[in-house]
Length: 480
Image 1: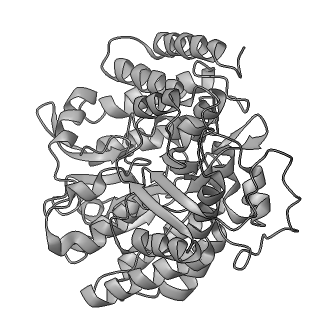
Image 2: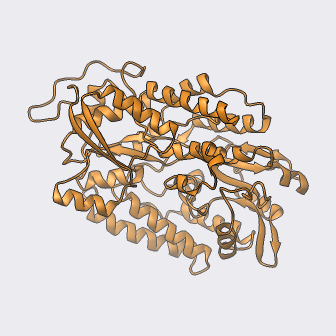
Image 3: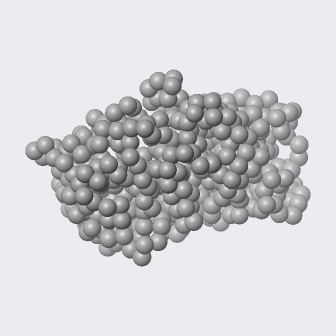
């Protein structure tokens, strides 16, 4: 696995573990892949008044769930995922639950929808939910929330709810919010005579200068990256941080704005200062990101953008690295927590939407997350490792788990890193929802790659990307 899209993409991480001894800490990252959804009224302080009776012919989400339930895209690969699934199953005693643990596949789901044989609940990237809603393949779940007395914008980080809102209705249950920050190799900084206070994203030009200062080259090939900004994977984050946006609040693409052009120009400057995109990509592709010679052990990086899950990986190597975390900040110095993630949605043709709703509610109730926190704490104690926390997508559950299970580890550097990731949650940001979110993401990545490779200039690349995404938008229900 390369570092590309590492700020948001966690699927398949469990398949990359190298040894059974590393299963725990890597499993903590893989635990992000397990199911996680809402909260029950019993443990959700955002509980509302009892829901009204369903309209005639509609789903009675408040009724006791029964029958069979097929869930697709959820893999209980570690104790965090398994404990939440166990909690949900215990609450749905009269439901026979089956799991399709393979990752969500758009083409497979479209074929299932065409045949009328769909799962009752799917897990997909949040950027896909509005597209599925626009195509009327998933159903709004506001009544599901209401029936279980859950106020989604109070129980979840509002930004994650924005990701799954289409035409004023909520279509998905957000899963996880793993914020990004800068992970700093303080050993490299010390050798280079750079202080931690000099590491900041507030001044774009200073980032370029810092990257060039800390980079080591063998000819034109980097042997150490000074500032790895996870480009193109985090391009949308950097554009948002610099005052741009890849899409408007209504979901229409806005790729070619002056702010985005300026940010892409900065990306090219940052890459060129460290050897250029082709050489950097080749170097990163060769790195042992999850192994004993990972970039922080091998001193192959000084500063890099990473989502919180990578801290779990690095905790395997606490004795071999020197680490600190610095918040990503905007021009005013305001911390900025960016994350993508997944969500659960109920297909329009689901045979048992009431059970799907109930299972989702139970699986990410605060009770379920506390069970997961307890299971993780037990494993951490058994292995003598570091508990880096669970970042659930709910501030309610995050706080409860942190207070109960995330204690001082005895390792000052990791305590500082863990605390930093919790601190940045005060300003969560995401891309938001779009009926053509996947298309926008693909067009943005293509524009970034051709620019960084020197095939075209930033303005031309983003103009072409905007034209492509606009064509998709005009063909959507939202844009027609």
